[in-house]
Image (tube, rainbow over all chains, first blue to last red; front, side, top):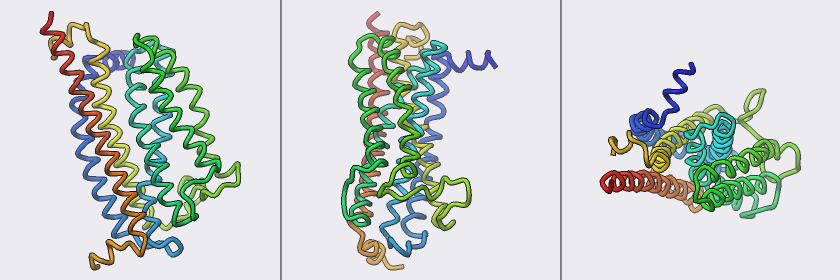
Length: 242
Length: 52
């Protein structure tokens, strides 16, 4: 086990492995996004209350899910980097931030587009929307903080603290619809009892979530390779690989 | 199903298509940014190794 961690945690090995994995992630996510979009836009039945506007769900909910998932991944990577002083973990955390910020922006923007016809407003300062907006600021703050240091090791330590403190916001986003009275509808899928959404409407949603996860897999592979190259600038293996 | 009806999205065309279009644009921009980031660092690494 330790041997395996050591091997995977070594930059040259990780660099090569990510390069091999990336195309698989990329093509499978492209295929699944196409299938899920067709399913969600054409095959899924129309909602009896919201009509065709509910189809925005298939891009909105997976984006929102990814925005939180990536933040947790980033905080876990930053924590591992802090505790065990693994450079690769810090690099992974740094690579997460721009991808997570993109999905957070998408969740907010598609939610706003959905909110206009359904609630009659683009934006409202309720708990769910506000906490998701704070998540966007956390990502942007994390990236700004990193770029304010020239020394990558100091950037790693400072930004890891921010990532770990900010993780408290993730359960707040999730439970915001239960703790406060909000305009946002409560969870209809991630419930302990049966989901309150028709199963035919659910398949494309799960498919799109998997597609977005694969997309994240692709993007993190590419970005992490870039991070490794930058950090290992003086390593012998890199000069041979380049 | 006819195409006109599909594109109309039951009267929500502007909302549905702009949400999907925006998603596509952001995913594509991210795709390009990640590729560029990697390519740029590869170029830097190559420059450094030839400079020595």
